[in-house]
Length: 597
Image (cartoon, rainbow, N blue to C red):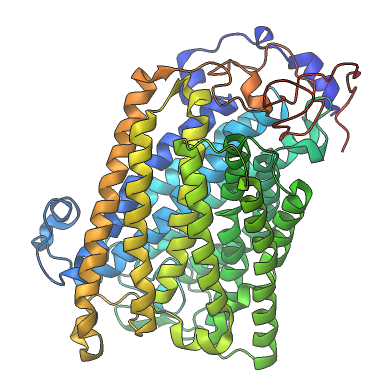
């Protein structure tokens, strides 16, 4: 469909009849409401995942001791003491919730839904009903995951990677569905939700850009969402197929992955002949690109925030776009670095090692371009800007630790140690979460028409930054000392007994980190109802979402915006102000008739 034709039919919000309450706020077809639904839902799941993490940390600091408050909520039937079996459920469900129910849906559910149409000048998503379904397919997944705690044998306990044959050993009685089976069903629902979103984002960006919105006039947030949606579209079917095969192994006793067959209560009830390593290939073919699915949108958000508050054009815009595309492309050919321990052919392992190291190059381009954007800028340290700058520092630490793991000889030693835990948390908690917080503080005025309290926002940043580093940086030391992940009581072994004090320090830091998220939650909730009212463009930004009212009405814009320039014209010599919005014509310039690529 031609972009100009679409906008002429539905550009102004006055053409849309006002929907009823259920259609407007519950089963909404409006991309902004759906984005806010994803945001609020994933923030709740973020709290759940955080509580699971604190329970894990309590066990590592004070093994087999009663846990107050959280323990009573999670496992009061065991005397507030974590059992070894329940510990494996805790770390499995913590990772599953944080990855599949928080980071991915928040970045490519909440922010992509809210921002893409506004930032490209479209009135809505290409497929509004599909967009609504993408949110409502998300809820059964979480309910099923929660239900798995109540079934016989308990929730999934094979780690978030669900490696066979551990994941195909059934603890429930024959004929009943154990927690691992429900885990697989839940992830299939998550995958369907994500695929619906990806199709929508790709179509919307290609077909519904405003007149004059060329591809290389799109903000980095949109570019990052677009490339992430392509990653999802190509990688997610592989994971979905693998989940279906493992589900069949567990329910119909097929033999895709389990060489011994189905085992129930240590008794083999069906022969197998499958290949456990096949699961690893299929799982990581999706799950390594998933690392970039969780970080590329944050990179786009940070790019826009940095340029806005540095009052400078984004340094190296086109190289930034190409680097995001390069990261996505290389992300498909490095999955084997998760499998160096699996008996891989050394020549193949060397290939994966070299390709993994190469992925540092486009990441370095982005990092240096962000620093170039900050260099000699007129920096305004809002809460969003602080989290964006914090993102650069912690992402650099996480990226540099990844270089160690890319080297096969080093990975053989640190594989499945706490060095890996430190790395992934620097990338996801320090990287993705900092990008998420930057995006929330930045677009909150557009979402709700009010601003969050900046003073409390800065308290939230500094507390989070310090506590996050105190929590996760010492884990590098634990990993270098050889402490394995997933052990409920590492001090049972004399080798790791001297690490207990460091683990206590990490746990206390994690509790402090959780406390600062309470400050964010209170600021978020109170600001929705009592925050200072925001005008259309409180940050004096150039991109199109700030042209719409705050919050935008159904249809987004009073009139279809026409785009005359790129998104980063700050400190332009053409105007007296230090910003020049994309929709403001340059004197003497003629309107651009279409949105050509």
